[in-house]
Length: 185
Image (tube, rainbow, N blue to C red; front, side, top):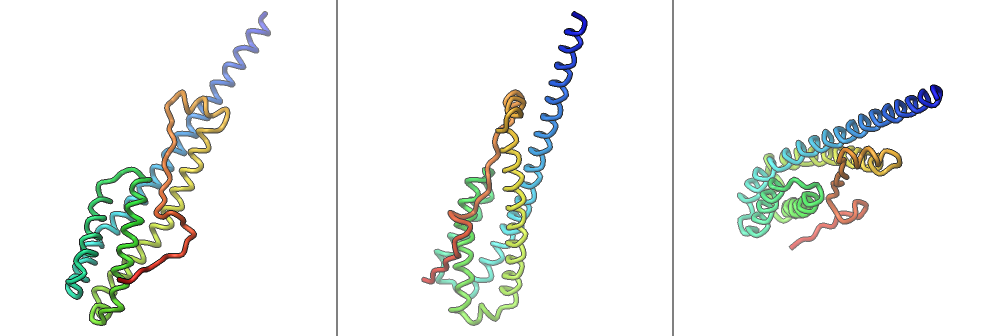
């Protein structure tokens, strides 16, 4: 009887230790994905801060491209209000395409191409895009690890018991491997 009681106590202690370990691991993974999202948020804010400057630089040279300039401004405004990685990814994808069209305009406007301000904004934006790409990869990796952990048996028991929910991936295009397509109007 005493041996059975000791065995039951040891099993309960082992289960409790496993539950604490699993809970702490899930918290660490969730926090890692939140921190990674904060990195993306910083890069998106840097991009969004460059958009008005870019629009202003282009506007001085190509005033009749008003629809494109308004579209870029509207997409930036939408992006600033969204918090969902999935929805934000769709808007950011459209913003990337519209900004790409802005850069194509430089070929048609030599004065714009020669503008040091425009060239500097281009370089700044390229740097932000590179940082954003790295941040997106890190975030999606952290989300993958976190989502896998909360779905894995036996951790799923702890995840459901403590309301751990799946995180959304951040995708900015229909197919990350597709070649960038630039259209001229």
